[in-house]
Amino acid sequence: QVQLVESGGGLVQPGGSLTLACDANGLRFRDYTMAWFRQAPGSHREMVAAINWNGGDTYYTRSVIGRFTISRANADNMVYLRMNSLSPEDTAVYYCAADLADGIRTTHDAGYDYWGLGTQVTVSS
Image 1 (cartoon, rainbow, N blue to C red):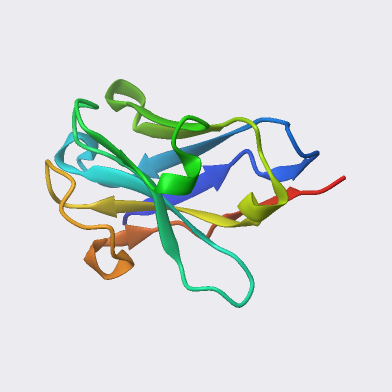
Image 2: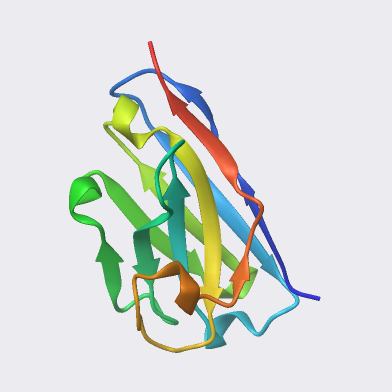
């Protein structure tokens, strides 16, 4: 049974940093492209960042370029999202997702096979 378990969310002040982690179990991790999505209240779910099987290719949505970094550790079945210079616009539930592909194929959530339950990130003073 595949399980993706996110951790690291919380409340942070504007300008602060958080690192999200996703522990992926029950799958052959290096066969999967991994991604982080987020969904704010009243908004659709959007891809924030993605990383291919070996970390050689990454994607970031425009609003997080230069502030967020996605990484993975295949030996530990982990994927991370380091978030710096957070703003209230980053407030959302953040989800880890897995696509059975060695490359980044899509930014659409329908293209991803497995999902975590999400972790809340709130940026507020």
